[in-house]
Image (cartoon, rainbow, N blue to C red; front, top):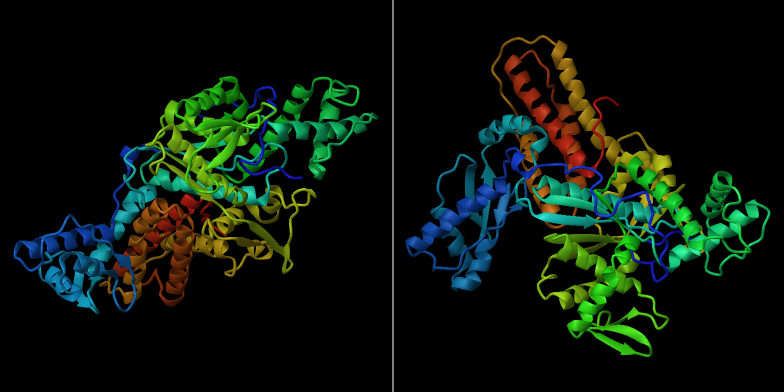
Length: 590
């Protein structure tokens, strides 16, 4: 049986506190100061401001009735119909009681002039379509290059304190591929929040207390005793993976007969802690190799030792959300079937995982003062979501007013040799994150985990991830970055003559895609959808490779060469920034 993802274990007995981490103490410094953001060109924001001015002017001259403040949204189309389009007039029509087309025409008639816009028209029932000025677009490339690594970021978060908790798999075995997906998703979300000006704390919740830790100790001890020629029973619901015997062998080699007892460890709690120590070390190694780190490794056992679980039970009782029935303590609250009644303390006296998790989340909000908390959980924790929201609301009606976000990642299937492998938890047959990493490396592992929406199931194609050709999307994107670097190396040694630059529609179209990057980052952050960045980068790589195959950058025309080199530098910068948000390296040679 493999280690459970966050939330499956910890239903009772408490092992000793581990020494591998210090709960609540940052392991790495904060990555960014939101006050140091570079300039961001957000075309969508500029157009929204123009529309607001146009509406205000139309209302001032009586063409449109007064309305509450309107925030214009725009869709980036970048096709033959428009570069950007707004349908806000259709919504306004329901408010002011006028035809949407007439509202759109009144807004357009009152739009102020802008160097950003070359043309604006009304279309259909009331759409407002914009075309961006080519010369303005090309002038922005210098700003992209100058902003460097800061391009795409913003101060939207204003330094707001956000905690992102992810992975949090029990240290009772190697990380599974599914846990790896949650880890990569959480890390990418933290990077996006970081880039958008939030003060982010990355956290791993270590389930180092409870029944699963006890079962792990019994499972490892069975093999440990056997390695030393003794017999010990194997628990009925024990962990059966090969790693259990490997850990036992390591303890036997390192500690000798120190833990031998009469069928049970001489010190069960200390032996459990020894097994967990090995499990946690393997987890940290795999995460390090995947490029995932944490500011805080938070110990459940240390929290229990502080009396936090008893404190939260008393708080819930004091607010009238606790009832005793059949010798157990129940949470009574919520309005749904899954959150209305749940056991907090079993009849045998030990707290459930639910009770411990309430205490943990109370600590996040009340003790440590996070303004927002984002949890990334595995697919089998969907039922735990409503009860956690209900518990937070029970503790403080304002605590969960959108401040607790729980994102549930879906299952991962591993496809190899054209076949989709099945994984069985209790059989111990499962694909580990380490196996995936060893097979395809961290870049492909991260990209493929991030290429699908969080709430969709995915098939990880190992054969595709190993390919070094354009069929492999991450290779294709990295190749575009390396090609940009190669062009600039060639340009450094090439001689050019004078000339007058005439750029093509392809140059402008490529540049316009670069200016969309800040919008992609903002949307990916706001909607908690890092897959938007993977899709954008793949599209940008396709456009750039096509551009490269069609146009020469270094030519006999010095002016054109200079302008195209600036475009290439901007492409390289955006590719590097996007890959950085995904935690993927951007090689200069391949």
